[in-house]
Length: 239
Image (cartoon, rainbow, N blue to C red; front, side):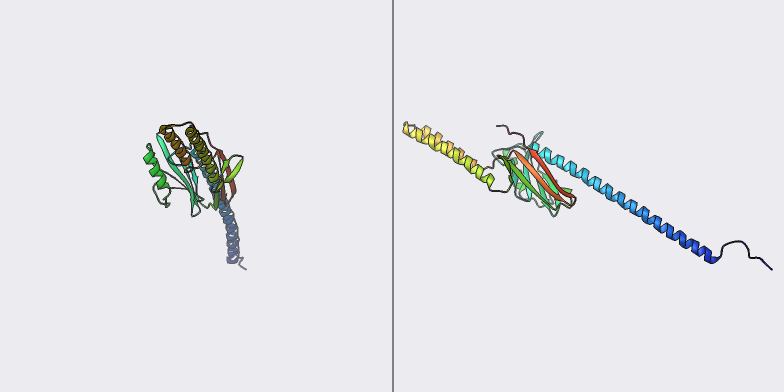
């Protein structure tokens, strides 16, 4: 009687191949999960580093605010914060804005004359998001808000309190000018003195055309990771 030769039957080979395929599939799923986890961690780390760099740039812009009689040093309209900041060879107008869930930053050309600064300020109010120098900083930004520190507390940068403060300052200047005019009239002041009083009144009226620079700026930005808040105190302006 002939004995069967040593080896595996076809069924045994198929069963072994099936077991190996199952083990390989399980191993591939583990490797794929590890790769996805690494990608997610890398993206989160890169986003955190980018956000840290952006906050640093934000603080640098605010630390170099330049307030001038021509244009306000800071202006926030709910969608964009305009900053006039000093640079090595002049001043620039910087605009931080939120458009279509993207945080953006735009900077004008360096201005060395008052006319150039006013032109850059006007251009900053007409941005469409596609201009040269318009940088996409961070995606998936849900919302943001800016607050100004005035007096003893934070207030919304769009609130009327800022305007009221300017109006009070203007009223004080106007009252001082009126008192000077009355004193000049009682003492028989000359026409030159009257002209000086009129000039003082005009100076007081000019104050109403400018916003007072706050002493601090608070940024509150809503991200998928959560809310981030950053406070920056502004340097005193030179007279």
